Length: 219
Image (cartoon, rainbow, N blue to C red; front, side, top):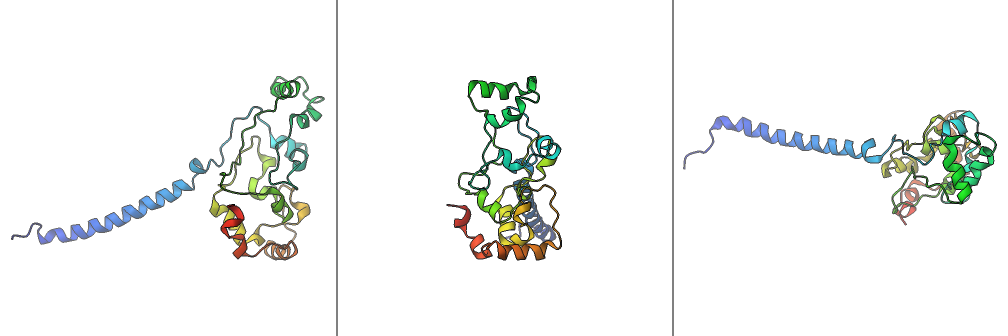
């Protein structure tokens, strides 16, 4: 039986095989890149809210502590969304007739809560407890970014599992003194590695084996 392809086709066949491998690797790299992109994770995207609340103004400008609005953050799994009464505490006196704040006044007047859209929306199969992170010295800024510089709130981090594991595998590079948990723009008073390793022991943070166990976050 005569040969179907001439011998001169051999280099082309080898080149095509190499090309297939490179195409497969390229597609894999593109999929991995897309999977981590802001398009997929919704990071760095502003979300339309019933009132465009500015953390930059309230936290960075006025200096309101996170706990004034998020009252449950130290004792509960959720940080808590402030009731309209919290807003009215100030805005019954300040900007009391501003059309911009009419939804707030209407909410208080009609006793109907504002329907805020969750920005940091973890999947239902992920368990996250704010209070334990605060207790262990994880700053608000570590997960939420510099909210004092955000005119509109956005998700700064990917919230993907690999992002969580970066801290769970090596918390010493992130933890800070408890009194600085709510500080924006925190700078360690010395070497972060040394301070972090001391705080890991002092705050009794579990070892990597426990912190990376599936049951810690998936219950």
